[in-house]
Length: 324
Image 1 (tube, rainbow, N blue to C red):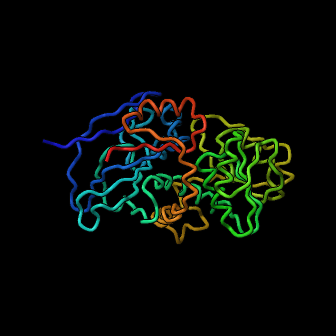
Image 2: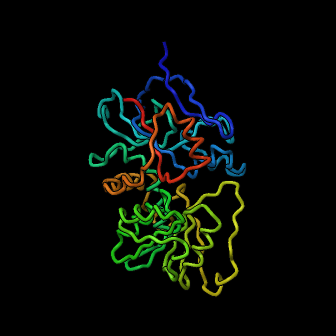
Image 3: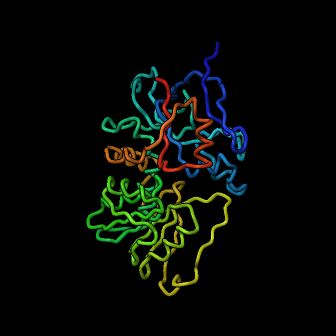
């Protein structure tokens, strides 16, 4: 009798369900993983759940172990933390994999990354978003002593602000419309401001709010010849970019950043694997637990994904817990 597992699928736009799938035996060079936690990358997964991936991006947006096709039905996700089952040299190890939300799965050995001993499994779900933030910091060219503004205190924005604050001499301000993000900023060691109090003349600005208003604020916050790095992904939504006003007189640079390619400043020497290993090592910092402020059982994910898509509230990073 074949073993089975449960996986979360976007069955139709705005509707998720758990589906039973066959669990294959692990072949030589493969590992069988029992999931402990997975993370919902709320911005991107809400767009997928609601069917806002533009057709032109269907192939580029595919997750490494995605099943099905956009817009639906599709099995999507990329933040899974689990334990390797019955494999010499691996058995019992906690690992991270860019896999969708699923109880157990089989993948090649090269697709997983060992979670360092000083990183709790429940925190390791942040690895994919920290990798995105790390790439954005590299793309920005931020250096010691820079004044840095991060607009948008979602998971990627918060992680980018946290990284920038660890560069010597950097003065980092995290901007968000939600005043309750001030407590998060304090825990991360950065200053907080709401949009009407955001400073001007930042040397580097990173935008991660996913809104036209946030992008306009990011451009207004930039100093002469500063770089504004766009970390948001908008799906098929049309975004207004105010390239009038002081954009030209300030000689600003608006630069996109996307995790699919290693930043050009590192690409010759850094592989995707090396970047992920660094992201996992950086997760030893306990203050990052403040970003995981929502959790549900795997069995409840179809309902919760709908709620997160419609009305995320104060959620920064949502964690899904599986039965061990």
